Amino acid sequence: MLARSLFVVAAVAVAAVFAPGLTGTFLATAPETKKSATVEQPQPVSTARYTGNRGVVLEADGTGHFSGQFTINGRKEKGMVDTGASMVAINVSTAARLGMARNDLDFRYAVDTANGKTRAAYVRLDSVVIGSISVPNVGAMVLEDKALSGTLIGMTFLKGLKSYQVDGNRMRLMR
Image (cartoon, rainbow, N blue to C red; front, side, top):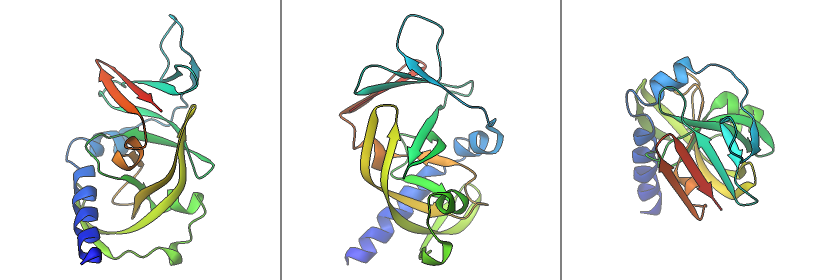
């Protein structure tokens, strides 16, 4: 029964992650630019800014998405925050960079995405970090590269925060 419940939750979570128009546009066309983090001051806006020892502010990009440079299991990865995604989602290439062998991944969950049907594997990430915020033991789904071309930061990360808030083109993450 627990396995069936986990399967249903995972399938719904992954399906929610891949809402048409949200991830397809961002992940297919996102430029590979480096974003920097700076101390919050009334100066030009950067993509991610520290707001003290427990907060980060992300600025929306031109399409209204909030992206930043995350450290996942000790490796830097660009990720897009998606409050509508139940889980963090990474692709097989990212999983390999994080030290996960493809043969160790159990792709038992059938999921529907904006790019079609695929299989997903459930994993636990040691930590997901952005700026001064670190959330340990984060659940994530691994999908084939053709189903997901980037990293989505969903609720399994966000629920580890004290709060998150969107105000216009800014998302404030607090730990």
